[in-house]
Amino acid sequence: MLIEKYEMKILLDSENDPLKRSPARGALMHGVLMQALQDSSLHQDSRLRPYSQNLVYQSPGEYKWTINVLNDAAAASVSSWLLSNPSSICIEHYELELQISKIEKCASLTYVEFLEQALSALPPKYASFEFLSPFFFKKARSKMPHPYPEARLILQNALAKWNEFSDAGRFAEPEILEEASQHISLQFFRLHSKRIDMDGIKFSAAEGSVSFKIQKTELRQLMHLAGKYAEFAGLGAKTALGLGAVRYTASLLRRHENASSESND
Image (cartoon, rainbow, N blue to C red; front, side, top):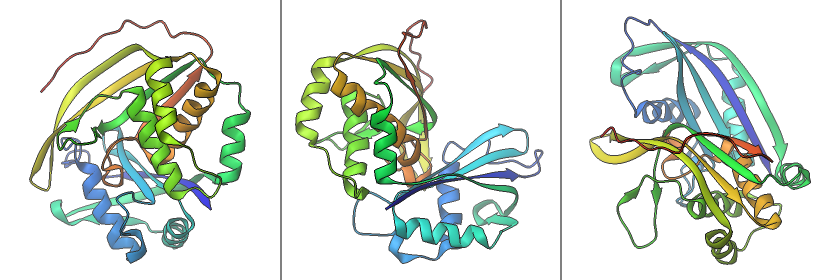
């Protein structure tokens, strides 16, 4: 089973850029992707999609569009489209044409290779997550969005996706999550709230970064695996619609940052 990452440089007229003002621009790109692929297998019954994607602002008139695929079917569909070397895409909502100036395959490996690489690394004592797009989690027995990245929720979300798509073994979530609650502590966070309007549905999300200290070696390995996998699968809900894009950093030393939070609702 394959995991792959593609990145594209997207260009448009900087004087006519409605995407910069839209925190839900990833949802628009999801529509573009589905129209381009025309693959019904990507709309499987599972609540977890075998791909994630996000559109991140780089500079006036330039974005980076990242598409991550988590199984063979999604990999075949996306690679087939990109091999046709598309030069432009259209966002019908804004009647906007975007130019694709560069397509790059950044990673391609099997789950077995991914697992071996993650678990062979020196287990990091500290794990940091920088969210590149707004995020929120769903908690059991609650319909309300939870826009706070608890270590338990990060592990739960990443391992649920791993267990859904991996052919390299599964992880027993309940035992791991109980351990996480006792042996992973928050080091710092810098978050601000974000109000998202996605197809007329409004909800609260957050942006920012968070770092954890991990006490047990076994948990350090699992958090490292979860962090590396999250760079492909995303974290939280609606990652297929552009939310929850994340950059993970592992460290043996504590990062010296002032813990802070701010609200911007």
